[in-house]
Image: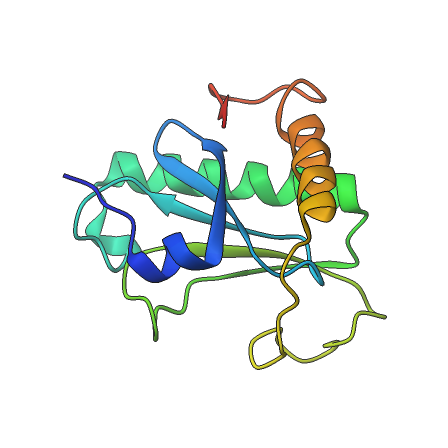
Length: 144
């Protein structure tokens, strides 16, 4: 049975679910930053997913990246799977701008700024527009 790693549960907010993955917002209001986690138990690497699940996960990740880049007018999308601190397979999708505080370096190592209640509500609304109904999705999406 799938369970979300406790660190991911602690550091993120549930946004919604794709057919294979759960989509979560990182609690750092400096960057639009979503995490996709395939709901497959005990997977730490992409190659451990079945070929069908690999294809689905990459479709979900690519679609999410394109929507984030469009809605937030990204200069660059950073998509990464590190797993050094959390071994459970997850992809980070981070909207980057050439004038953000971490540019051109990675966002890791910067002090995070937790969402306020108001900022979280605005971000959820923005993501709802981006991920539901503003463009056609190639699969079903369930918003939290």
